[in-house]
Length: 207
Ligand SMILES: C[S@@+](CC[C@H](N)C(=O)[O-])C[C@H]1O[C@@H](n2cnc3c(N)ncnc32)[C@H](O)[C@@H]1O
Image (tube, rainbow, N blue to C red):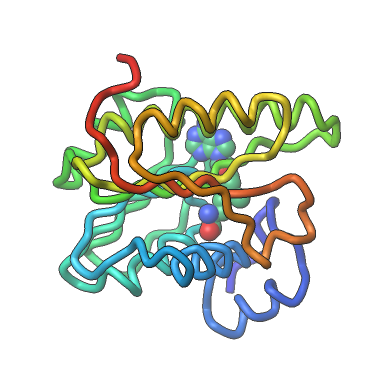
């Protein structure tokens, strides 16, 4: 297993990830989300935002199988995966044209689902960290509205702060059903939670 990613906390989930061959403990957050909402299905095309070091992508690949595809993007370079239907690119989610091009080059323009575990480099100043997280989640949700098929889903991590309700309200306008869910594996991070949005209504937020 590679050395811990800067976002990696070394606890029981870290040890478990090591045992199971996941690149990060975050894998268990997505597994809990999947257990509760059963979003990811075999054969789907999924985009993962803020993907490094790649444990969400590993979980997704296990579920979508050989017929599905997983495309991940992160500011940080990721070690390649040994499967043709997984692609990890280095890039910034705010550079949307490059992102769309890279997705297209991998062979898909539309996705069944978008997952986002994006997180800013934290400063310890709550207002600043939650504000940056809201910006990332807002952008992730926006990108999802550009690439999701009608009825698709979005899962996005967000740090709860003063911008949380605004981002949540915006997402609620675009999806049929929206839940806020905090997996057991994030209990140590008091203000980290996930927005789980299902049934994309296929009307774009903005351009
Ligand atoms: C918690 S880590 C993701 C862990 C990952 N889900 C996994 O399972 O391995 C959050 C990631 O968000 C990425 N990130 C932050 N801002 C970004 C941006 N503007 N564009 C792309 N990635 C970004 C960071 O580089 C970091 O790797």
